[in-house]
Amino acid sequence: MHRHGYKGRKFGRETDQRLALKRGLVCALINYQTITTTLARAKEIRRITEKLITMAKKGDLHNRRLIIARLNDIDAADLLVDVIAPQIKRDSGYLRIEHAGYRRGDNAEMGTISFVDDIDLDVKVEKPAKKAAKEDK
Image (tube, rainbow, N blue to C red):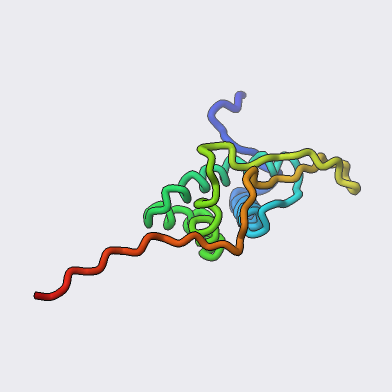
């Protein structure tokens, strides 16, 4: 048997549990800008988060709805599209993973995942004002 064409890690969980784990980790990364987790989980959520950031940089309504659907968290999606994505100045490679030693209980390899660029959550980037609607004649 071969494992060709199967993407992603299983983490010893069923599909719904694995999806919830990934969503939770991605939302935590968006909200806190850096998290420490196992190295395998960090590598897995990097794949997901970088695709979401690329969609957020486009910033249109369709991509915003796709991000909300993938995260199931409107606040995290709005934070990503309105605050984080406009501050990122690179085309790819938005995240960095650093090794953080080994977990004490089971000696699992740990990693810290964070944004490469400095993100200021207090700054809300202003959108250009929409053109005024045509006046009635």
